[in-house]
Image (cartoon, helix red, strand yellow):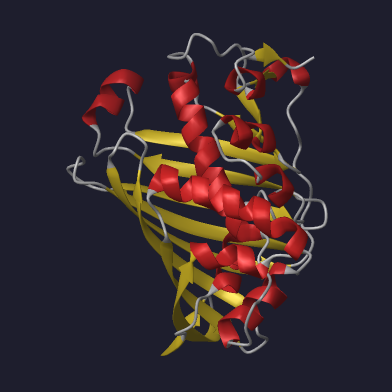
Length: 293
């Protein structure tokens, strides 16, 4: 469980490392990303696909979420199809996995289905709680805590911030209708090594440490992005693809498409009662998981 949690923390670190970026250029993608990321909130839907030579078929997932930027809070539901991994069906009795996530500042709550939870004896409650700032440090990502101070961090809508770090060469692809809106499609690359240069000078040294650790853990240096931008200069769709190398040496190809179907304030999530929560943050730091008081 510790290895899994460390991997989750490393994945979160990647998103957070990208999240503090300023626009850094005047290209249309960076301009739209800056405007969109400062909206009061977002409602999104997305699809995810993970491919690997070790899998007979890709892992696919769909999801939806709501996120309020000033409150740094939100909720997410993810439905995964793990039919390409027969062992999952044998262990869980199903090939489908539904995960729920609640976000409150830098704290994440994850609800696991009973079939999976019962396979992990150390879990005493249906909800897991992880302080990502502490978990990132435990996973060997120094400087991560400072990146959580950005108000757009710790939610999947931080995908918007990938676009702020476009590294030149933005290409106009054409036009398309997205969820009933006319948009212009652009293609660009995000270079992780350039992300720290877009942060305030006081944060750059720590950001370089965090990103270097993520690159070392994942082998990831560049992310390909496509963005569909409407007439109001808001991002309406994003497609992100990258190849990642896990600490185990396994190669993954990841693709995420996110639609921003609504901009504006969103209701806060209802957090689970303490009796239903197991705090894993202490376990990641070697203290052992404890039930939230």
